[in-house]
Length: 389
Image (tube, rainbow, N blue to C red; front, side, top):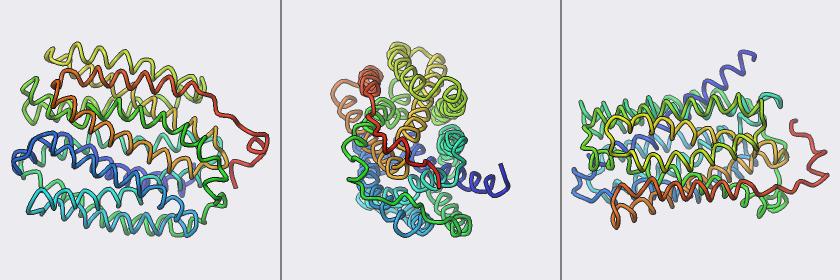
């Protein structure tokens, strides 16, 4: 890998780390935000829901616009908006303003995350694309065991608002760095009409990611509240639990890249979804069993995110012509899943309580496995189309 490649991956990794922190830090902060604004846990969960809805709606537009005008413009715009939205979150005088700030945050991240994946896909060597994508995915997931726990510790010493002040400052710095890094990357030559790429087939494939996201986030969004309610965890114990989960997620993503290269994208993505179903059942059984919860959170994330990374690699291989479009829609599918998952999680805890969440998630994981077994029909024209410029 040349020096430019290392710089590109480093900038992509750090940027996605910040985006991941913004998403993942919400779960451990929800109990404290709920207490300050005097609203229920289910209501504060709408901060994640509205963020995800905005992302899901806006991401395809930014993907299309970046194909036309260049990705760096929208990545830079997104980071500036990210800084503004987090500043608003930090100083929101009411819960209504807090919701508005998360709408803007969702819009900003929609202009950043899928375009980072797309631009890495554009510049990566064809025989290393899976590895390059797994590296930047690991930046997003490192936020689970580093960014989110650091945010939780900041809350402990300076209050939850300080977390968003720090992210706003970092967003401004990264806006400058990304502007300088991507400005000279040429526009993708794969620009095409969405319908040309068989949109229905693409949506069918990315639906696997939607159901997978439900299996992960219906519980994760409320994990901090669940540990606080069921296990009476303190903020430091919640931070430790999220750290175990985050380390598992990063290791799962990186290990998945190695296994995917060796055994193939399809086999690994299917195997991980079956294992995820079984592990979520075990998590439900052992959720209130003291320190065992740390182990099962680690294994849950390890297997779950190994599946996500291998499935992204599978999509990149199965859709060589529409790679940028598919990555954008796959991220939209991810946030639709987060949206539905947070809504399902809120309904479950309101009607049956936190202990039922892992079992509901296991059902979603199994449905995702079933969908992943559907074959993608590839035409001869697609097979002869070059995957790279």
